[in-house]
Length: 214
Image 1 (cartoon, rainbow, N blue to C red):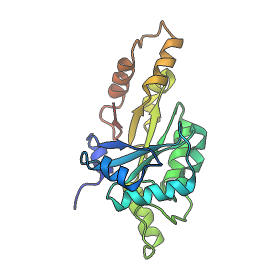
Image 2 (image 1 turned 120 degrees about the vertical axis):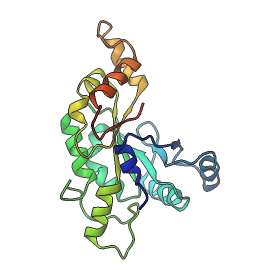
Image 3 (image 1 turned 45 degrees about the vertical axis):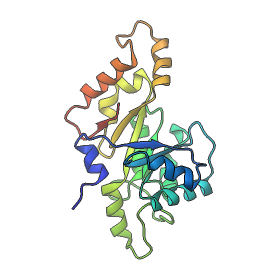
Image 4 (image 1 turned 90 degrees about the horizontal axis):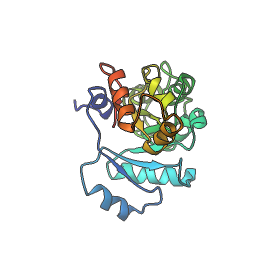
């Protein structure tokens, strides 16, 4: 049996991710994906316009081309909507600007089906779902394969990293520009650079299941 992307992350391996506009045409997406052997194609709604119909279309198009979609949600407070977004086709979710455990708990509950989380059943366009799949069959497959990432973008998030890397979180990613905003507010802090902050997270997460994607 081939190793899943989630298993690779848990072994500390990196994934190749291509960044795309949600408005990319099929030809544009094919051209992008032809440049390398990508594991995921990433689209963003935090700093870009999107609508749900377009999300469904993009995820279906990417899946037809053999690459799952990673989707960064619009706001940290939208973590409760993760299950709704997943029903539209993303395989991986990125939650931006996470700083506290409450957000992590909410994201995990919305991302995973029971018994791990509380995601509601109804994957009309869910990645990997087929009409003949039984509810428990797909739920187990999803819980063992879907990828949940949180984005650390502040001193508070970085210092709290060990508590944020709960079971169910697969990967930490970083927002360098917002990390610099945070550093500029605390010029006397022991962290002086983004690299200092990332290295602290790497050290905090050593020996855990969470991949630190620097």
